[in-house]
Length: 329
Image: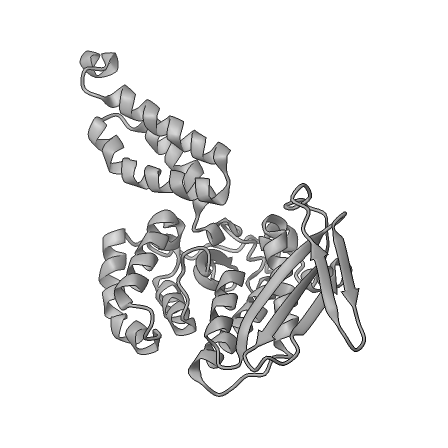
């Protein structure tokens, strides 16, 4: 009798090296260039992709086909996978039984596309924290009034989210407001939300949710920039429900890769620095560590930046020529 409870075997996918990635990426250059908008130089896009892979090496464990396909999707959307406009993140696909890369447009990316579109001047989106002054006026003179309280900003207690689209023709802005209960209904469609981006990036996902709803009411022209915005929103729409398919896709690295693997790399590089035994080995890690410190500082993760900084300084001191440990060795 077949045991339906038997664990699913992981399909072995060979991890590619950074050099192999660069070689394989060169093969899709024509595809990327064919869809990349003119205002984004190919060299810039390629550089951002390379940095993304360097900062989140788990991407090298994904099926190569999915990784390169998602690079093309990012180019097609006209967005950079830089952790702000969007991110390519690893996910466990229970059906394929391997890690797969997934391109995720982010709120800043959607806003950028809106600015480039034919009819939409801008899209803004915010969450409302409990205790902030928030007022929605309906009727002939609709408006949203929201006073940000910096003491409350960033708390876990979100009561609502809203989005506002302003049109280039100067007509009345299009507004959308959702209560937290309404947002929860969307979130709860995914049975695995507690293990995914909703658990770690609650405000980002709430803003995405209300932008999705707003997008259904936006006027789109037939120009390519509007197509990009529409496609990116549709990708966001699908990604919000992705765990219903991917699953059991309890995200392998969750949504930390949305910050280009910053948190993931903090936990990786500190032990690497601690285990380095030669000055040359530490120097090889120095640029990566320095870049990570800057990224963590920019993200406001001072504790993480200090951890990496202290580990780097300690490793440089410990392995420097003339240090007692090196002399005795």
